[in-house]
Length: 269
Image (tube, rainbow, N blue to C red):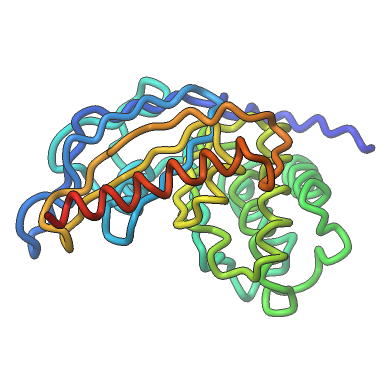
């Protein structure tokens, strides 16, 4: 395998500290989320699950710096989050690729904006093309690719910026079941290789148990008349290579599923 030696220093995987977080939207009564407390270790993979409207995406947008909290604090690597930054990369469900750029040009966009040298840009681009298995389609445009391939480009484009934290908002939600399974395995491999800190929002409990070191279960939300909040955080004590057919895997799945439904019922009562 080719050895890459780019001179750009990557961000180290960062801790995340969320303390007393609350968010109020002017056009809505009360707080959308309230009292959120989560500490995430550097290099940890955390999934956030919960019913629609419980504040999962709001939490991720605040972590990304796209929105400001109304109360509480968020720090990444001991630095307060005051807006978007290169230490945090975000991957969305809709890919967000530039349709007028090729696969390679999409991946190279961030390093170019960071004013890396041309050889380093090429080196970083080649490395991530190889990592996500898209070297052969480097000159293709996004519309020429399948959904799974487009999402690989989206992940590679973010990781080419060497973020300390990778934030993912239901990135595999639009993919078919087989492609989604392949992408989950691909993401686990990339996480092993990069050790980047990951916060991954999903509706899929199977997906959360398969991917995560810990699962944050959220409940509540405006539809239930109480703010979104953390109901429980569950450590997933399973090996790295996970089999969804094992009793241990399904025990976690049943436990989380029960918490999600209990949280919805409790919030509505």
